Length: 366
Image (cartoon, rainbow, N blue to C red; front, top):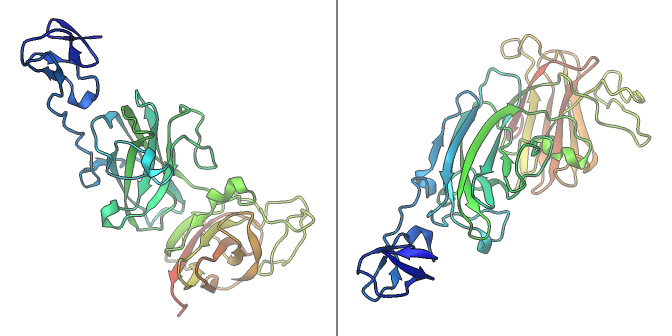
């Protein structure tokens, strides 16, 4: 029950004739309320409430996170249009959405892989959806991640979020790449409401990689690029059929059974999975001009074929390169379309640790 002028109204209509033009609560659409009573005492839609300023991808709100974090509060999808479709729900089940843009350039002087976590805390929004794209849908953007309700993995901790709060990780990007992520807050089953938006940059560990839960640790290097990371605190996550930790052909000593000792060799995991046949030149840079003071003195590159891009999907050992001498390890990989291959970086000999620079060049080695 609500008021139309001084008269009682029900279901948007005045019980008795009211003054033409009196305000009333148009219950059928909050974005068209307050409504206007007509000469018959019926509550008609009022002027439409303007949509939020970031209603479309082209008008996305810029997220400033120069210090590695950002929080925007008191936001809403109320009265927004349904412009974009998340991939994690049926297109007929999403609702009004608003857009954000997070820009970030990976520094070329830091030997630590990083990625962004983005999450939404629902205010009075009953069920927000969060999804990320490489660009606006109309500009050829592809979806990078989508989530309805937060799911724990090695990158995202949902323990402090509500059961309906969504969260996504934007993945590790190569050095020097200037990314402009497009992020959208949508609503399940046409729902809308207020929410808070958060982004946080954190260190990414691409080890261990020995269980399905750890699949997210592998870094996607399909598009190529330069990746600077370190092996500090990493462990040997490759075991033989007997469960013993082992070294591989290119290590010193090779094929050594170390039993339960998982200290060396430890692996940093990457993968490529091209849509079309591709050749990659994969190499590590050990030159003094680009390597940090604590760099790995000798690196090993090991390639495995995977049945899919998963830690538990190793099919067989493709090959390796490494050993003493300047210049680093190098391996040329021919990757058929749709076939996933894991790339690992490790120390040639014990102990484990230090920084590395991995180049994944699209094309044959010179």
